[in-house]
Image (cartoon, rainbow, N blue to C red; front, side):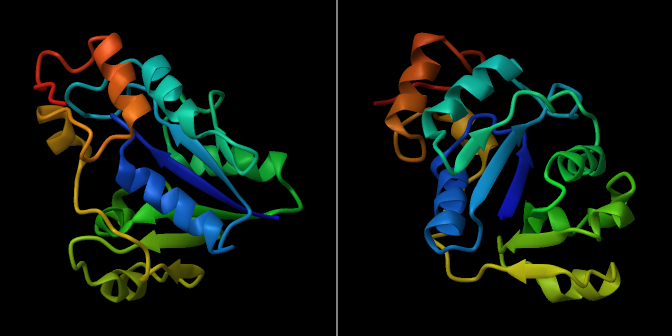
Length: 188
């Protein structure tokens, strides 16, 4: 089975994240995707509680989309992948990353250990991915060029909470739980 591991803060999970997941599954690039929202160790502003981010991602859970709630406090991606490789010994694991992450890939803790997995790279912001593939000696990769890319970031969404980039269920969850109030403006 081809399994993708999608690690991120998902603060909040938005339509861009969901488009990536759906595209990879609908086009049979992956059979299953495990979404791993990260704990609060990231150096990020306004990172809401992991339980809320998991709850919002659960709206998208299905037979092929699994929302992980076991690996959220593991600090480094290589450790997460190592754990999954023990659990899915006979499956092909891929790490899903955006092109914005490939720029500093060599700064990731033990990034060389991640090179034994396939990288699925989602283009973003016209970043020259091939430059970094050569620089970091990345051999196992797949660049997904033809997916419905949404040029948005979670930080922009947090400043203006509305349904343009958020699934209605996620938007309702945010409003009901009064998330991002310090920073965001709720709109219909």
